[in-house]
Image 1 (cartoon, rainbow over the protein chains, first blue to last red):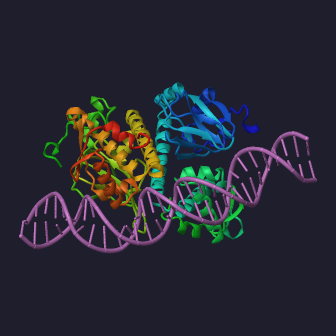
Image 2 (cartoon, rainbow over the protein chains, first blue to last red):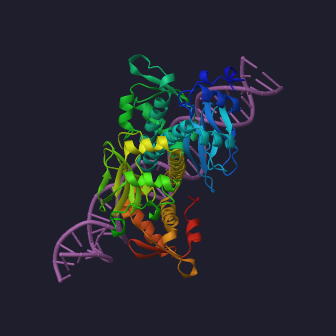
Image 3 (tube, rainbow over the protein chains, first blue to last red):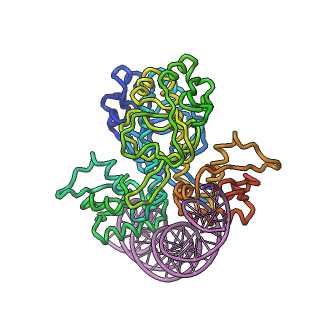
Length: 240
Length: 240
DNA sequence: CGGTGAATTGAGTCCCGTCAAGGAGCGTGG
DNA sequence: CCACGCTCCTTGACGGGACTCAATTCACCG
């Protein structure tokens, strides 16, 4: 857990206050949340939730990056969701988790005991509405990803991925001169491959090709500069 | 519209009463719904909603089959959802549709004007809760489909598809002797291909292979018998 | 019985997966 | 300080599964 969040109790000052499931709450409702919430943190690489295990809590991701993963019996892995700050983990009225939740970087969660959260939903229509809105957004995102997985080439998949990361982190990455952007990839090549339905080798090759064509610059394996997002977008096939 | 639904006003007798968004409503609430709902029907092949068009209504699918589709600029098509009776179409608080909704068979919808439905959600927490539940289920289904699109072979995709249709229509298809099931495919080979992220030729070839191996029998191009669902499930990779 | 769209089947190609080797970055410990 | 080991990443060679293009065949209906 980052130092500034240790013992945090003030929801008003929370970095995800206006985007998370609590976004629609008023000051009074926040006080209720503050009284029952608790923070937890995980180190990079740790499994936060295992598929099929009982889930006694739900949470908002406060800081860090996590993935939602499915592992088939024969070892193939597909990432079905990328969790960034303000994203929600778990679902009410469900005993067992469906997917593994894995901390990619160090992660901080704002947690609620599931049964308590369910009571909250029942008594606070605001929150149910906000949760519905977030879930519908996630559903749209999942469907956009289905288009990527089903119909895009490796090259288009990688370009789309880079633009997705760019979009979801724009607030943190001011444009460099001449509208170039520098983005920080939280995922390794293997994790990117699992998200894009590819192998690590194919991902690496496509990185090299985009680099050779000047569409991206690779500062380090996890830092990429996009000289012109619009040109890259043309390589991504349909937008996300 | 099927004859028995023409002029239908009695929600209690509705075939999707206990599965649709109205499932959580009590008798009194149903009366409110009855006063503002209206039925619409579409012929097979008609487009119910076009992506990017404004959407003035939301609806429950009462009978028939529809798909949610995305068409890329260069003509590739990916089906991102299969809509069967009780499924919901549209979303509150959204002006424009994101995906095309296409009637695959003749279809009957139970519609509400969107603004009216939004008021209903605001005043009836029941319905918001039910809608959240349905949306979370759809999200799980979308993620399961992501695993299929990203990691399964053509053979596994088709086997998974057949089992999906089987599961979603079991109520209508009593097992034949010796636990064989006969299922009716509402989709053409091309529509199946778009749903599975394959081409029509690959789908056809996999149908032939499964048939040659005795895993399915093809009664007609749209009717398939599954002699043993468990054996077929072994060919489907991880379950849905 | 011929016409039409859907489905099947074949032949050839290519993109991506597989297998394998080598390189880069980084923390550890001698 | 540098050798060592580890993990991650890159690159090459090769093969196969799915796509493309093309030709029948099938099913349905007037």
